[in-house]
Image 1 (cartoon, one colour):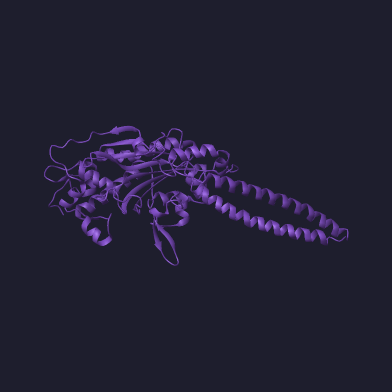
Image 2 (cartoon, rainbow, N blue to C red; image 1 turned 180 degrees about the horizontal axis):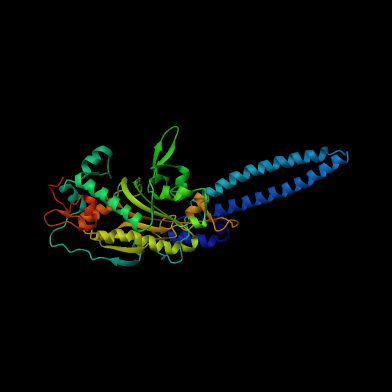
Length: 429
């Protein structure tokens, strides 16, 4: 959430940000509610000051044995007015917060202005896409021919956009999860976490998925519960310190977690209907940082490099792009996407997004830190990135490492996690 005073004082700047993002926000209603709340607060303060002064007069009248009935009656009416104004103030504040929660973060000045993904500039590439001397296959065909992925029976069980992993396919998914976690924990300084897959509405509001994107969430319907399945471990890791004030010496906090992720993909009809790229349920290893605002931009660079290291060790070609204003996420001030090379599509596809959310999430979730014992608390900055989306990594390995005989070579870094298996062949189990 944006600082409300900043929004009110900079309506034109916020409107430009909305225009650059190609989205909408009700700034007129925001300004009206903000001004009304401010007016009510001022009126209540004036009435309370009057009540305090008259209360002192009443006390003096009573000490002088004089009649104070008129002033007492007057103050009873003032008290009733204050109560009515307080009630109105709460309602206005709730409406104002609802409007504010739907305003996106301010894009950093270094974010390129653009309309959509076609305007995302490329920053760098790593590795060289392989040139095949045979007709290469898509990962879904490879998975079925190797008998390690079963899309048909997953569809029978759960419908579209689900997958069953079998044999060495399941082993490969598990190997990647453990490999990624070990790298982040042992080499990059993250603390491993295991968090719930179900969270409250308040938790999802803290990280920005709600209220604006409820249609993308899977909700658990119950007469007694109001839970949602997490779309990413970013939700639980970021909210871990919600409503708390940390010490400056507590920062930075680096967290990583493997979770299943659940997404309705409401706006993705007809896109990536085959394979592992866009699933309702998928595994992901997430990285989250809570940091001092003075270091958050350096932390974004290191977070991105941490995600890149996974692909480098797996020897998968990739590129890094900066998302433009028309493609950047709702809560992000700046995002780097890491895209892995997918031979079957002859293009790079997103496998990680690394974002600096500045104080946008911290303000919503009320996560603060104090520089010193007598210092005023400040909001932390939060960052998050995939390290990586596991199913998409499986897809990239299958397509990039396929051989002419239909087998797939296991990346060297994964062999210890695969029990020494170096190649998946059609007859492997």
